[in-house]
Image 1 (cartoon, rainbow over the protein chains, first blue to last red):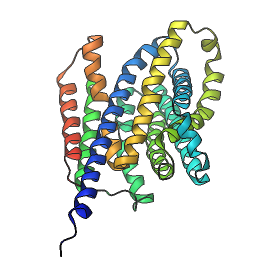
Image 2 (image 1 turned 90 degrees about the vertical axis):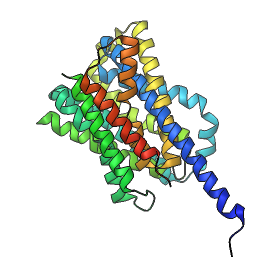
Image 3 (image 1 turned 180 degrees about the horizontal axis):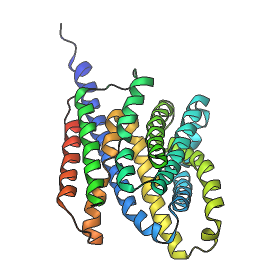
Length: 161
Length: 141
């Protein structure tokens, strides 16, 4: 017996909608980070990169905290574990920025940039080691990620020639 | 060698950091995760940058602060919030490669707004990135 239409179609439609929104959000994040790379060129003319990142992060956090105050209030009762993961994620982001500046100041950009571009592959590697149950990885996504990393490396080489 | 080790460190730390954020997003909204992760990141960056660059900070002009403000809005407010929102919907493995394609829009903006020159390698790199993004986005789930 076939299940009722709503039992199969609705979740599939909802999944498709979630996917479209998720990809659109990823694309928008990509645009925002791309624009920030252009703005960063302006920032580093007057400000040391590490200081620029710290101040930019402070401004970003303050404005986002004001805009999302209701969400933050709503999440106050969230399990402590989630706060620990978010804090570790933030420390990792800050630590990564620090390492990136130390790398650039100790080696040529043409050497450092391709290594930094590997970041999506390390994220996928760690997701498969630690949260395999939460993250489905297909060959298509893995190959897509490898191609993207290759493209970013080619761009960084092109910028330094 | 030191520079390469730091670069490997950055790539590794960012990779594991994304996993931690994915875990946080199971129970927490992207906005809250973004605010709290920015706060904890600052715990590391503020002391370090203030110790190293205090003289520059106290001598910064209003124009420099304005530039840093817009950089912060683009990277740390919009970028991080949208990135976490995307991870919470399509997962880490699909979101992170697309988000890390940011050199492509940066390249286009640099050519359009700053009049920077483009060469064959940049075009080839941009097309390669777009091929990878297409491969991921067109997957049927």
